[in-house]
Every structure is written in C-alpha cells, then in structure tokens.
Amino acid sequence: METEENAWLVPDLRDGAVFETKVVIKRSIFITTVGRVRGLEGAKKFVADISAKYSDARHNPFAFNGGPAGNSGFAGCSDDGEPHGTAGQPMLQVVLHSGIGEVAAVVTRYFGGIKLGTGGLVRAYQGCVSDTLKELPVKKFIEMKAFRVRLSMAYIGALKRLIGQTGAETLEENYSAEADFLVNVPIKEEKRFAAAVVSLSSGSAIMSEVPALQ
Image 1 (cartoon, helix red, strand yellow):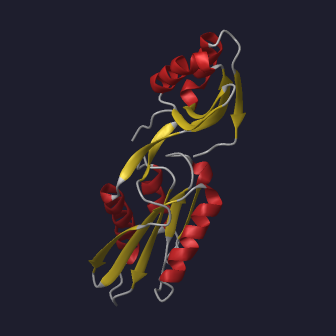
Image 2 (tube, helix red, strand yellow):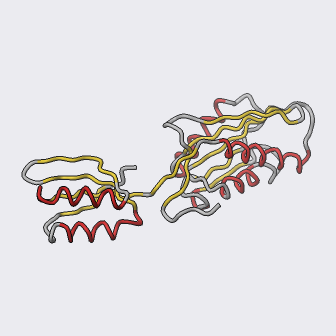
Image 3 (tube, helix red, strand yellow):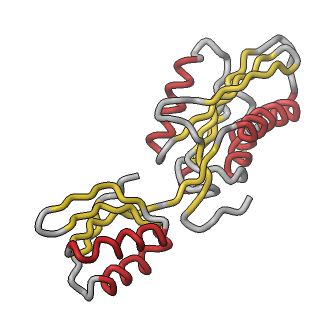
C-alpha cells in the first residue's frame, strides 16, 4: 500500500489501549494483540508488556514498526521459540506492507496438541496479523513541526487564514502587546508556511521552531 509523503496510517487507539483478536487453528489458540508504538523503545516496551500478560503461553512471537509505514529502520521481530523463520519474519512482512506505521503485533499461541508444521505456522502467524490489521481502527497521521509565531495584532486574521489553508493546527494563542501563536505545521507545508508568514507580516513576524508536539 502506498503512503503519502510525511503522512501515513496509524492505529486509532488511545494511549495504552490495545486491539485484540482470537482464533483457534487445529486446537491451538492464537491471540493477536496490536497497539500503537513510537520508536524502538516504545515497541520493545509494548512487546514486554504483552508477553508478561501472557507469560503462561508457550510462544509470544512479535513484529513491530515503530516509525513511518514501511520504514524498516524502526522494525524488529522474533520467533520466540517457534522454529526459525516461521513466525517473526512472516509477521514482519505483513506489518511492513500493511501501510500502517507505529504499530506492533504480538501473536500469543497456546498449543493445542496438534503440530502445524513449518508451512502451517507461517500461514497461521501471517494470517493472524493480516486479519487483525484489516479490522484494526486506523487514522491518518501527518508528520508535523511545531513553531512559535510572534506578530502584530494587525496580522492575526491573515495568520489564521494561513493556518487553515496549510492544514496547520493552532495549539496555543496568547495576547499581550503582540500575538503569540504556537502552531503545528505539516512538514510538507513548512516552507510555504514560513514564506507566507514573512509576506503577510511584511517581514516583522518572528517565527522559531520548538520541539515536536505530536
């Protein structure tokens, strides 16, 4: 699935929430738990938390991508005791080609007494992740940069129109001798936004980048 530059789908879940499905395959119970994660450390914590929750299970293979959709630089996986190559890598291929970023999946398996074979395991783990991601609620995430803009009161109306035109978000507004705006700007609109701020204020506005606020 193709993704727009600086924008991708992410799980539409509140902080700490998970999305879970369960299926029985030849008496083995497979529980797939998916959550939104940010970066490698966030992904590792999610995996550790779910593995601890299901610590009585024989296997908790996982796959994650803690960054933009399809970006393997933030990815990782493990078979967690299943035969090599039958769980983690097949799951990761689904994750990386799903069009969804900032996502982790742990597939917990409670063995039911019937061996699936290597091919059966690959199909089971891939299918669990694929089917769960198809049901997962998602939303579009647009990568932003945060800026503080200080300008004369006379230019407030023009700045607000610019914010609407570029898909930016106003995070704070403060007024004293001048107006002080804290704004999240889509990265793809950054240059246009900065040039327009200079233009609309005749060069008098002060615009400075601040740490990301997403």
